[in-house]
Each structure stands twice: as C-alpha cells, then as structure tokens.
Amino acid sequence: MSTQNHPLELPEGSPLVRFSGVTKRYGDLTVLDNLDLDVGAHEMVSVIGPSGSGKTTVLRMLMTLEKIDEGVIYVDGKPLSHMERNGQLEFANEKYLRTQRTNIGMVFQQFNLFPHMTALENCIEAPINVLGMKRDEAEERALNLLDMVGMLEKKDQHPTRLSGGQQQRVAIARALAMRPKVMLLDEVTSALDPEVIGEVLNVIRALNSEHKLTMLMVTHQMGFAREISDRVCFFYEGKIAEQGTPDQIFNDPQNERTKQFLSAVLDAN
Amino acid sequence: MEWRWDFTIEILPRMLSAMLNTLLAAGIGYTIALVVGLIFLLGQRTKFRLCNWIVRECVEFIRSTPLIVQLFFVYFVAPQFGLVLSAWVSAMLTIGLHYGTYLSEVYRGGLEAIPRGQWEACRALNLSPARTYFRVLIPQALPASLPGMGNYLVGIFKDTPMLSTIGVVELMHTANALGAETYRYLEPYTMVGFMFLIISLPTAAWLRKFERYVGRSMGITK
Image (tube, rainbow over all chains, first blue to last red; front, side, top):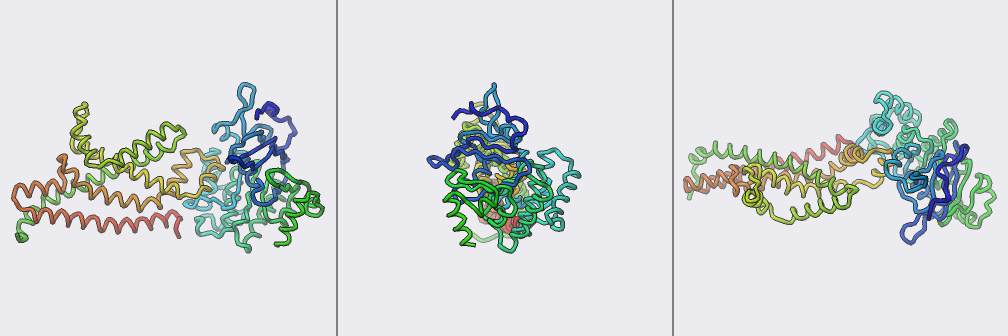
C-alpha cells in the first residue's frame, strides 16, 4: 500500500506515538489489521486481549523489532517505520532506525539482561556506547536508577544470582538509563512467581505517578491495568475492538468480545 | 626386539626438541584457526547474501576435503602457480584454514544457543552490530563453544604428525629420521605415542577446568 496519504511529519501538538493504518502479516496470517492508535505524552495505555490478538506485535513494531507491512508509525511527530526521501515516505533503513530508536525503551517478558554483565554493567553499557555518556556520568545515573528500583545493593551481582523480580527491576532500570520518551512493557510480570509480581508492579506504579513517563503496557494483570492506566485498549484479532478509560472497559464494556474476555479472565482469577 | 634404555636416553634430546616444534606448530596453527574461524563466522552473517554464500561454500569445500590433500596442494601444487611457501608457512596456513572452518561451526553453534531475546535486547538498546557481537553475543557464546574449541586444540595437536609429510621437523618426522638412521623403530615411535599422551591428557583435563572457570567468572553459571 502506498504511504501517499501519510504526512511526512505530524503537526505540532500531535500525540507522542501514532500508529496510522498499520498492518502486519506473517504469511497469510494478518496479525494487525489497519491499526490506528495514538498514545499521548505522559499517558499510560494498557493493552489487553486474548493470546494471538496482536498485543505484543504492537510493542515489537514500535521497538522496531519487526517491520510493518502497511501504514506508518510516528514517534514525536516524525515517522519511525519510514523515512523521507525525495518528498515521499519509504521504509526506514537501519541507519535511520538507529537515530529514531533511542526515543523508545522496552522491558521484556523474559528480562533479557546480559548474563555476563553485573546489574550495573547492564545499565551503563548502552548509555556509554550509544548515547556517548562518560563512564562516571553513566554510572552515577545507573546507580540512581538502581536505587529507584530498589536494586542498589545488588549492583555488582550477575543476573544468575538474582530472582526473577529482581532481574525485571534491573531490566526496567536498564531501559530507563537510555532516557526513552516512551517505555514499552511487554507482559513484564508473566514470567514471575506470584510472590514477586508486586515488587515489579510497585516500580511501575512509581514510574507512572512520580515520573509521568509515557508507557504502553501489554499485561494480563487486569487489576493493575485497571488501577494504573489512563486508557485501556482491548485487542481482538489484530484490531482494537474497544478502548476507553479503565472504568468504561472494566465496569461497562460495550463490545461483546470484551465482555467475554473480561468475564473469562475475571472468572479465572 | 627388546627395549633399549640407553638408546632411549640417547635420542631423548632430539625427541624433546622435536616435541617443542610440535607444540609450536599446534599453538601457532590453533591461534590462526581461532582468528580464521571468527572471520569465517562473521563472513557468513553479513547483510550481503553473496558474501555469505561465498564464505559458506568455501567453508564447506575446505571441511569436505582431507587436511593432507590441502597440505600437499599448498606445498607442492601452489608453487606451480607461482606461490612458493616454506614448509612451515604452508603447514600453518593449511592448519589455520582447515581448522578455522571447524571452529567457525563451533562458534556458530555457540551463537545460535543464545536466546533470541539477547539479540532483541541489543536492538532495543540500540547497540551497534559490532558492539552486539563483540560485547554481548560472543562473550556469551564462548562458554558454550569452549568444549568444541578444546576438542579442536587437541585435534590439531594430534594432527601435527601429518606435517612430517611436507618436511616440517616435528615429532613424527624426527622419529622417522631416527628409525631410518638407526633401524630401531620401537623406541622412537613408542616415545612419540607417549609424548602425545602426556601432553593431551592433562590438556584435556585443564580445558574442562577452564570451561568451568570461564562460566563462573562470567556469571553465566552459578
């Protein structure tokens, strides 16, 4: 599909993130179908929905881990998935992606910390080598972040010596160390034992309330999504079936699929 | 024929000196192979498909032909095309290339054992491809690659007698010469076997210790 209908830049005052007509296919399977989604600055948006509904794909495309097939993603007014050439948008090359990707940070379900580096080393590797920070400055910042997530005492430990919850908190500090404008949280508690989920949720709560970071969170923690989100999007078969405030979605869902999903999930809990 | 200790002691200095050459040949050959293996590995993972294909085919070709044929080709055939190399240089080049192909496969196995999430974390943190490989992926691939790398170190060491065929004065070459000079083969060849054994066995044990040490010191194993 052509990108002619998509502007080269968004006007001032546009949302921080915009998915404009984004489609993603794997072979014959359409994972995201002509998705339009805006995320405003300082907004906390939760993405919920059944498995295979395209929730994680949204984050992976925004993190540029996957290429999109159609449409354009904008971040901070500029195209992310595409770049301008001769007055037209074309798919971004790796060099362009590297300049734009610094706006986005991601925390993964499986933490993905570098196992051969200590917690502190994990947090300073990219700031030094990507942002060009001096080592002292990067360490000072990393120590502050590790303190914020309650992991300062474990700064010299390798990930294998940390519990899942502790690893996830270091992973959050590592992503924050890059000073992203948007944080993506991909089922960050799904791989955790129930007793440590709370410690990770507390960190996200603090990020939301004290730092007002723009966050897009895929989660199965319905209670948490309800408590923390400014907006909840319910995904079904690659589309947003319904979106609204947590109160609207959880107390008065309009879409039949949303009702079924919430009823099944809340029953299971 | 019975064992003669006086003859054994008499030839011991020559055998020990040849042993040093054997160790040198194995050491230099292995070092070259380590680097060549890395080049072959990276050469197959570029964004240029043609380059990847050429390197992969070269690796397959070298792996699929015997070391001794390659050795003869470099030492005896290459001069007919104007490339004249000494026996030592031919030997080191051939061993380096031959074992480099095996080591590239060992490295590849180590890299492919790294969870996909590590690559994705590097991308999410915007690390450059060079930084991704040399700072994140290769250090993690190393512990998984060490057993295979150790095997090929011992393998190269045990293949050095083949170098005697092009005149590299190593242990086997010296034993052959001693046999031809004295018509006694029992002591020289027994000593060759024994000397290989007393180097190979402790090396294999040391390599296992080293694997454990690397895993622990990198925090990858507890």
